[in-house]
Length: 169
Image 1: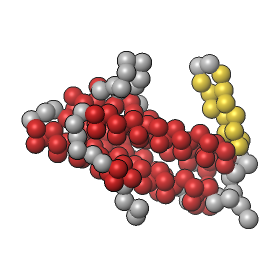
Image 2: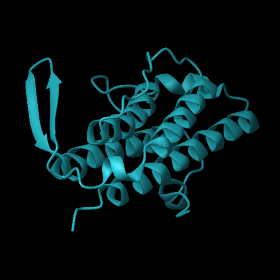
Image 3: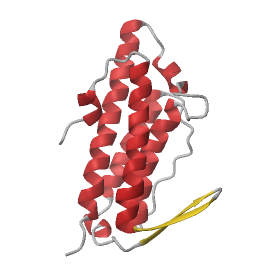
C-alpha cells in the first residue's frame, strides 16, 4: 500500500495555517484593546540574525505550498513577499489554504519515492518524497509557526497552547 502523503501533510498544514490566522486575529484584537499598532509587530525578531515576524508568516505559508507542489507536480502560486500588513498576511494564508485544498489527493498520495531537490545559495539538498515531507517540510513549517507564535506571545498578545494547536477540524 502506498504511503498516504496527503494524510501526513495536508491536514497538518491546514490546521497550522488556520491556527496562525487565528493567532494573527487575536494579535490585531489585542492591539486594538491596548492602543498599539499591530502592524508594528511585523518587525519583531527574537534576535538580530533571525527573520522578523513578517518573514516567519511568509515562510510558514511557503513551506506547505511548496511541499504540496513538489510532491504533486502542481505549480505553486507565486508570492512576491510584498506584504506589509497583517491583513495582507491573512490574504496570503487564505491563498495558501486554498491552494493546498485544491490539489487532488491522488496527486500527493503514492509520491513517497518522488525525487525532490532543494537548491540553496550554498548548495542543494536531495530527498525522496516521504522523507522530504516528514523530515524537512513539516519541521520547517512548525519552526516558523512556533517562532511567529513566540514573537507575538513575547509582545504581550495573550496566547496559549490552545491557540498554537488550533482546532482539529
